[in-house]
Image (cartoon, rainbow, N blue to C red):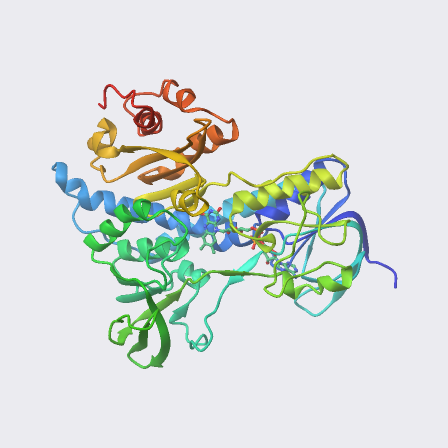
Length: 472
Ligand code: FAD
């Protein structure tokens, strides 16, 4: 069969992994085709992930700031929320970015093919568009960047619009009076933050014994305390066992996560958001026909150059493994495209920052304290409480802290965590410090502007070193 389209590089999926790989490959001179099932480029991150959630979190932060301005004598009164306008604002933010991507693809002469792609052989992909028409694409090399999807808990009434995944929650159909968030990870807590600010009465259930499992417990505490103060009910070690759709609401039955534990009584909610993780899309691509191994869970194993078991096919982003983050996907994308274009490179992810854009934000990078303990690493900790930061006091947000983890033998920073407003912006310095192999003095002796929250990073280094002289 004659191919409809031939290309040097085919990229499957146009999320932050896919569009970055396609643009880099094109910049390096490869004739590139980008296949995406949806008409808009940008994948989960731009359309139904990072970007719309942060637009809504910005609105939530404004509501929260206004509510506390009374503390210094400025009263804005109760917010009047127009859901249509807020939705419009979010959609406009998304639209600006996705339109920008379409322009960038055009500029680079990346051909975009819309439809669902499945492999036919090691060098062939079939793309089926919505009207059922198919096109045969023949490629020399390929990057698979088909991403992930929200896990749908089985047995829940998913055909009821009141049962939502994160995409539904971002669509902002209404502000439910009572919202249950199943899953206290980053996505669940970000959406809980948004809906609480908009006026919902929010309950969070989490199976593990802390919110945001995987993060150090001390980093989570200021967030959990603030949520509780705001009236968010949090049930740890609890499972949402069953949801029954009733006319007047969704009746949710809870069970303890482990035998002998306790669980709240069954309750009615107006909406339930399920945010219990994301599953890779690797199993849906007929990748085996191309000689690409896919694990039972749908992940695609890759080597240090992002090559799959078929050496001319690369895989990147959410479907190659955790953490499922946009900046990991785009970094892997550049590597894959550069290797495909003949550059001799490899990369092992050690330093990938994670950020929860909650209020306060939580950010961490490198080794966590929990991990260090589990691995028996000899680490020293420098911790600076924001209660001693002039800037944090000035903005009335002293609940945060900054901590650095140092290798005791080399005195090099190997990890860090920050909880507090703007933690997500501040964590980049620690990421750079780890990448650069900074020792404690390199950070402590770097002059940070005063009064800023960024000073807390230098102060944490000084706390470890015992050289701290002046906290304010
Ligand atoms: P995706 O973005 O999933 O893109 C894959 C693309 O492939 C999709 O467009 C899909 O339609 C397409 N596709 C799949 N199969 C096919 C096929 N067979 N044929 C054609 N096209 C196909 N990460 C952060 O770093 N920061 C954040 O703040 C953040 N917030 C998030 C908030 C939410 C609510 C969610 C859900 C996720 C968030 N993430 C965040 C995670 C981030 O969105 C993902 O890590 C990122 O999008 C992964 O990029 P990717 O390129 O691997 O895949």
